[in-house]
Length: 382
Image 1: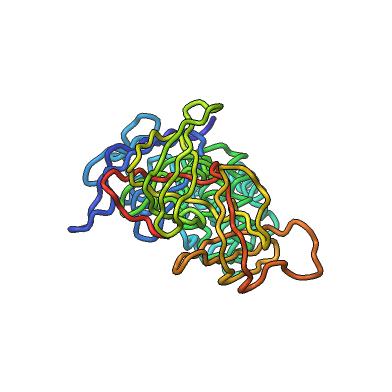
Image 2: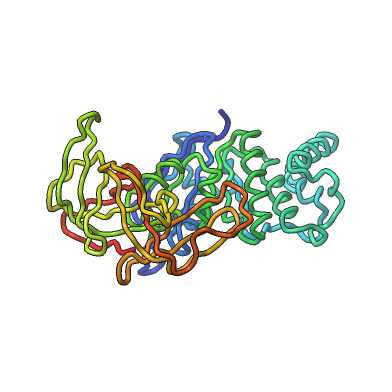
């Protein structure tokens, strides 16, 4: 495996009286595609700049393969950064932009041309070598920036929201290309984004950040299915999130260390959820159920299962997106459930559930998740 391990230990950073990073500890593995994900102002770009050597922490350690790199100048850290604005030289051709760092190193002329052409082929720009940046599309400019960064053969590539200037379809195409490039060269990628779908699509692991803290580190599946905090549950995709109180807990007879809990949720009455947490009656918790895990129908489901949660409501707003419809279903005064329904089959008769329809929504206890146990209370909201 190429690339470097990147260890961040006890990193704090403030600008004046404003704390930007608060005791950041991360271990990024050699060859990983690792994303720093969070809203604007959460500290992710500052952390990337500290790794790059453009900023210095107030306290803490940053090491590559066990070597402290804080005393090492940015240009000697064996890493490269791709910025949001591409930072291409407008007066140079694509070929010369990619070749720039090799020329500074007095790379032999014949080897230089061969190497530049290899990297242009890798980013599918071999037919654009003699164009200037102004003649390229946004996606092509981004490919030039990637080739220019990778031609130095860094052990770590840092990407600071590199796709933010592109339109939605081009972002999706570039994400696939980035993932393929990472698979080809195998070095460590550290990717900064505020876009949850970007991070979920390409990352081996994700660190979710907010207000200078790392709230959770895990695979995309772990982050989405098992959020560690209310913020992570809300920030990663869409969800229905409520506060509740544990009313009862019973061990499931055929399961090892799995419990069926009943929660009293003021807005919904009582719901059932399975959990591996050792809850106590009276515990304050927050509960989440993802919209795609909730079923919606015009008729009451015919089921005798005791672990099904079932509510009646009225469609407040249907939003049709072709492949799916998102329903906002009012189940109580002021309580609206988000429900996603996929459309896997052809239909020439239009949707079977429309605005103001009375409907039933239901989900299994296995599909909900207890996000936080709040011994001292707290508020989750929807």
